[in-house]
Length: 139
Image 1 (cartoon, rainbow, N blue to C red):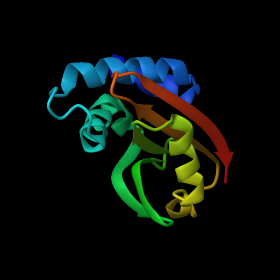
Image 2 (cartoon, rainbow, N blue to C red; image 1 turned 45 degrees about the horizontal axis):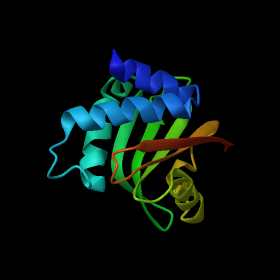
Image 3 (cartoon, helix red, strand yellow; image 1 turned 120 degrees about the vertical axis):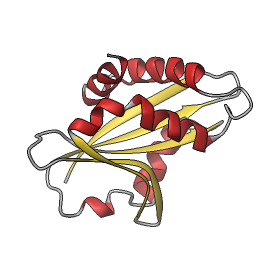
């Protein structure tokens, strides 16, 4: 249920709800020793978006543009949903993550995809607070 809610909130561009759900999932599923680690959050996100696998192929660390997109969601052929590129940041702003997606052209691998793409920047800090920004892009 929570995975479905997370995907719905992301597709609705409800960044506050996405941050709230991710904060809860991250807290429940990550060891305190590995909590402040982008890789740990990346794995947690893969689990949190588990139900998205029905509609998307999900790639972690997809080489694209001038680097690696943390998570890339490509809709399956029969699905009419936007593609998504997610970048994660620790102790930096979600806006910084969003700018990295653009600056490093992480949507390059989606060149054959035509339609809406959601650019999602997610960050968290030492206080375990999470934030999110979502921007729509048309390709």
